[in-house]
Length: 321
Image (cartoon, rainbow, N blue to C red):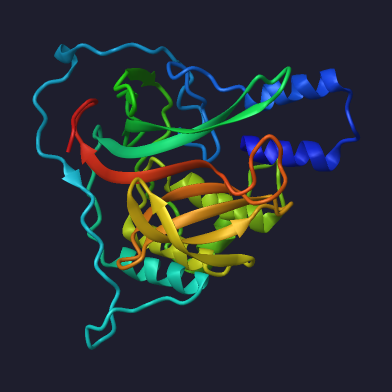
């Protein structure tokens, strides 16, 4: 569950609280840890659940890394086209997702061997709320470059999260000892079976309404791990059947223009976007926009976003494609 969802539930489900209780609750919901201790999961769960169990920021010495071998990187997606070669153009949300599925099927799968790592590079930004106990003030998102190395399997090899503050260049390194494989090979490749999986949930977990949970599960699955093309295509096709989606034709992430398939939260206060390249329909990243009255957020602001830049298979922590 993300901060915005917590705010929505707090406002919708509870009777009015006294000012002191409200301030304490908001402090718990909005408190942002320093860069050296990032959250295990913020608005889209940017780190796999449990991945930062051993958080300890440290700048790694150059001697840690040996000369990298040539890794396998994400191949460019082809533009979906008709049999005559004319590009296909989607006019609605479901159409974008289906073309994204078609594009995914043309990609060459990344081959991983035991002991290798999934490398994901992205730019992401999260907002903050200051002066919680007095006059809460919204602070716009600040960009941070993320580089994460995660084992492809349940090996003894540890991972690493490296975060660089874009504005200052300051680097923070967080060792990861999670054990969750980042090379996902067991998800359904049939769209109907994938839809059933999206709507499944673990007993005891907090739930929204099923459509909202299924929509959020897409981002949680795609983010900072690798799905083979057939599973990714099945996920986009299954997403096309989730009701309540719409299309936003102008969307930007990290300077890349695209189109967004979006869905409102259960309360209608927050919009959750998946953004695709407007020509290739390649998945670019995610965005959260406040569209309702959800103080202290200004209406219409982008609360948080992440732009996926590269996915590759590498041999060792610190190795770059």
